[in-house]
Image 1 (spheres, rainbow, N blue to C red):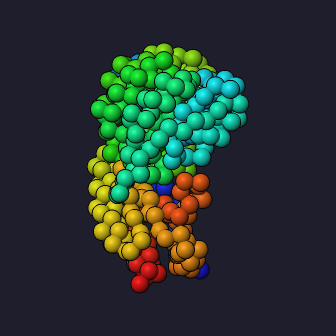
Image 2: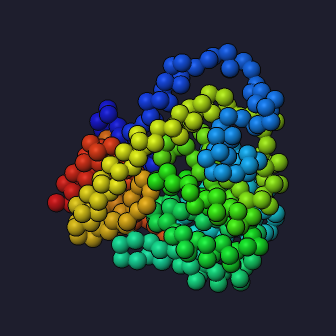
Image 3: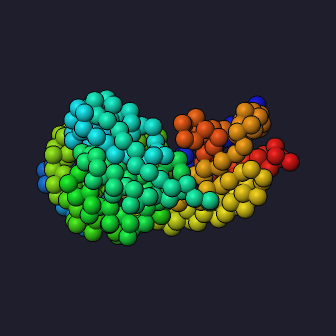
Length: 342
């Protein structure tokens, strides 16, 4: 194997964070490591929650910070899901959802998703029918969904939220790769039991900092109390996150480049006989390959130092999920896969 291993299996952003984030570290006031945040003296929970509240046009108590989005998802389950109650999740989704439900004795039920020719689609009528039949306590909607990459459009989202009004609904937007937030205020104001979870790990390339946040509806005050940090959040993380929020041009440029590179995957890998590249709204793509080539392709990529995710799920077991890396890395993967099949 090459000494220069390229990791494209966990959906990190290989371009790295904005230069302004590094400047925060270079100029950091290290005395802050010794002292708790005292934002409470000004009536605020902290500089990051105050900034996010301003950006979303909401009161600061409608913003909850967490140790990445995964932390917020787990806290929501611990707060609202009781033993033998049901959590409704997508049929093709992150294994972690089931794990955190099981930890509290909850029951995971999977609503349908349609596998179309070139993409996966949310089955909105199927979601609504299952909700009426099962009456879950919590519904998770992953948009874009990991690992299928498809998102739920705003019109359909508003439709299902109206149907799910009696449940706690969590919009997991960890893979939202557009930086848009304008629609979220309207959603949480219209649906008081809605939580929209996001992270700085993917779009902002700060996975190692573990910064997540949620925007919540008015009836989610119990979660706010459950997740409250009396002594404040990580002070340097807050400053780095704010530097990332300010670096709009940098991140929009990366997103455009990734979108262009996805088109190359669709075109070049998609024309290999037996391979299907599913269209994705996230920073990764899902590729279905002939099952007989799974072990051989994995070995070939590993030999070249290219580590991608070979799926081992019941419904996705002849598929690979590939993180969209830098342009150079993407060309390496495309060339390696093409060479293997030719």
